[in-house]
Structure formats: structure tokens, C-alpha cells
Length: 93
Image (cartoon, rainbow, N blue to C red; front, side, top):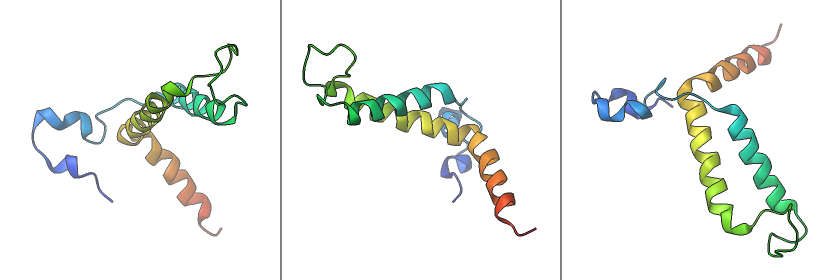
């Protein structure tokens, strides 16, 4: 599928065009790991005594952070580089 924002000739939408974002892979990984920690912690983030647990009040923000960072990764073009590497490795030699 092609990015529909690329066809829009308006400066206001350049942030949604291919190449319009810079990826932040460390932040994406951190957000995914925080989400994993939240879903696997024994207290479900409800007990205040446990300092290392993450409160479930921040679940919406973690999910949005992952969505936004994933969108930036796609728009930066870096994901295409990985996708091309996988396409070549799938071909018979």
C-alpha cells in the first residue's frame, strides 16, 4: 500500500509524508518493554507499595507512544530497509 499523504501537495501535511519523520528506535523499544512489564507484573500496577511496578493509569499513554513511534519508523523509511532485507532473504538461492 502506498502512503496517501504523499499525493497531497500541501506543506501542512509533510510530517505524514514518506521521509517526513526521524525514527527513534530506542524510544520505541523502551515503550514496548514498558508495556510488556505492565502486562506481566504481578500486581497489575494497582498496589502503591511496589515501587518498580508501573501504574496502569499510564497504559493509554504507553500504547499511544508505541503507535506514534511505530508511525515515525514507517515514515522515516527505515522499516522499508528492513523489509527489503527480508524480501531478499526469502528468495531461493
